[in-house]
Length: 312
Image (cartoon, rainbow, N blue to C red; front, side, top):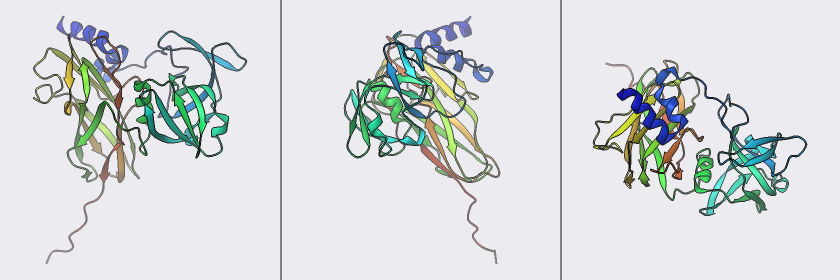
């Protein structure tokens, strides 16, 4: 009965993604969410599409998470390499996205912002100087999700932050390394879920060998409180939730541990980053999302140890 209750509490607090995490390595593919046109099969990229409140030829109907019906164009105005990065926001509800020079002129009025096929928001876009557009009307949490996709000129963190700290920044091929996740700057935090992506490298693989939350650690974000936790190595997700109430997290607090293994032929710099979708979330006791920012991806170098020369 305790296991069933644990799953029910976590699902209510964090949402459907927590249910997926609790399924551990037996995770099945989720159903299509209201704000997804189709299930992504590759790492998500940011795209900008035309949007309308009324049906138009060549547009698809989309229902947002808030229940609003919108119509979005199938073909993006900007996508992939056209979206180069994000510049500092003007205020909590406005941010600038740097785009390829010469294409910003095609972006104006209300637009739909997507990460992969996941709908983020529909702000107003205006063309700015030097190949930029300004998006007005994004909520802080929406802006935070966009910022996690870019390692250059990210939005300056102003609230909650999720970071990764490796035990060592450099390892040898065939070895493993522990990477701890930390949450800071989150007020009234009741639940969190952290989803991880790994990319980069020149050769070989850098894979998730294990993922866990050491709830016995005194610096765990929910230490000495009634809470539940779960991890899904296959899906790259881990979560924790209080049964009730919330906690103010000012200094970095432990959220979980990744065990990463480099294959014997692995070489190069591998990156660990947050998966900027609804799978990464911080929530308060009212299940309202807490806006968070993410720094540039954490890098781990896999290299062969330099020889000290022949012994004499």
